[in-house]
Length: 299
Image (cartoon, rainbow, N blue to C red; front, side):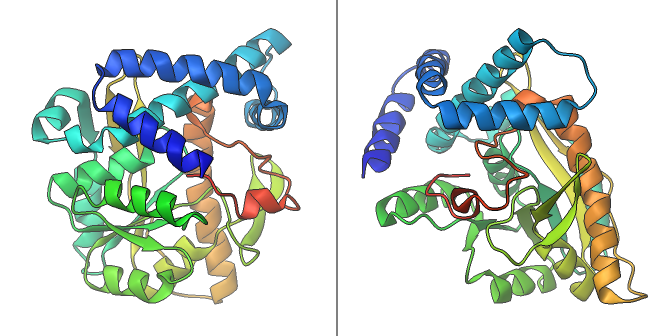
């Protein structure tokens, strides 16, 4: 219940205060939270160390980067709360869109397109914008254990024409969306079940979802890596990379593994470039953490 009340209060303030003021307040709250939440802070630090690899960063630099992760996530929430204010004028002023031709190329085969993203930047706003500009899009979303929280997030998403598909009842709806030549947005950097695939991610084995590759292989839909990146002035770039087309030949398990590795390499490149916009508050390479598999948070 406490999270629901916090979300409602945050939404109330974000819709009534100037966005710059809302960002400032959100960042202050984020600073306090990361200071008192040692477990989340340590998880972010450990994830950053793996992502940055051999890059030389002092402990002070890593600590500051971790702080920026929490701040950027707080801004992400403000943006989510303000979805009712997102219109075509907002998109024109604050969103630079790159690569729509890649979506169009993928859909030209009549099998839709899988928009593959990660918990980076503002993936929710990216899908919202595509729905606003007229693309038929569904998104696989996490079901929250608290019904009031779940209803609140569903309401926000439905403010555009985006259609949320809840994990757990997703399979048939995902197939229908793609076979209807629609877009299907999914996140590929976190597995919320134990049915994923063990692959290398930043040089270390972890369990990640294989759903995007399974859909792509079985339906023939192209995967379009898509990312909504926050700029320094708090505007956004919505980037659609070149489509990754599935190979219909060969043994399925091997083809799924190969396809997964291809799109993970794109995710890795974006996370390395924007590490302070990657919101992972559990250790990605700790597959025994039950909270990692089924949290009651928006990510």
